[in-house]
Image (cartoon, rainbow, N blue to C red):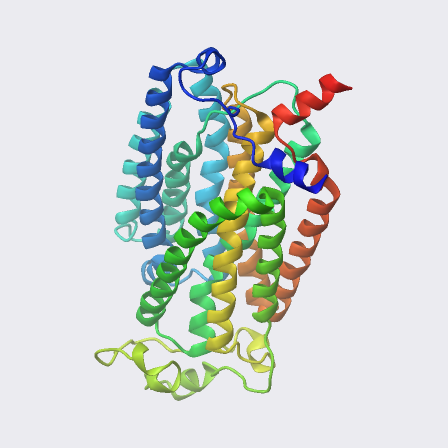
Length: 415
């Protein structure tokens, strides 16, 4: 029975057919097959370029926001990051419906035009004399609206197990929620815990995310091979467990506390930060950073006085584990979802999956920015661990229903 379950998960989305056979030609002609793979490769390139742009921007949002509008705090940062996903969540179902009834080039061209215009606006949000943070909020929302195109993939409708569909959407929501809050809090967390300056935080967190990106590429290639042996459901479960361990490691322990920013404010002087005391030697700056702002954990955050520091080793270890679990969960969610839905064209369901992920990217930054600011990392990461446990429980409850559309149809006909 176990081997049959894994075998059903390994079944290709379009069935086990070869080009030229009668059954293959009924489903898809050779010309359509080549055209489809050309489109897929274009989507690969589009998503790759879009992800590069997103990664460049996400690390610099917090310092950029502080420079253009000093009234912005960490809570508003959550809304700025969430606005991207609000735009994406609104646009995804609309583009899904549009692509079903009109040529798919139309929504693609319109979304690209919106993205270009929105990024131009983002580049000039420092120009207005006031309310700059709201211009940034609007710009990021428009960028998200234009980014909805990258996830428009054609899947099916029909005799679908809607319980499995809803459960997969919820799991996908949790997965995106977790990573969204991690990338949101990374810059403020390292500035508070290690007294990094804005420039140092952007540089070193950029290095961390770049390393996680390389790790993700390896994981994406590895899970393709591993899924053939253990199945997508088992990999999804394993990925969630690894993510839970990563966030558990992030919980503050020990008796050492972060540097408090009130010392700099009390002396009314520019802090003299010795970077070598904070990180390992190869992370030292090539030249001394003359930042005119205070560093350390702000006294306004009361938890800074009693919450132990999260050591750099903890952060890096947790990052490695989250970098393993997140891509595995992400790709397995998409794979399971596409197999549950089946092979016939239908963009609305994938639009809703994208909207679910966008909702996670809305709530994740807002949640973590508020909980972190007012309660601290111990409460924030404890709540995340609880969410992952609930997601694992949900996966266990619907585990047997997460099967391919074709297998479900065969079972229905057999009954």
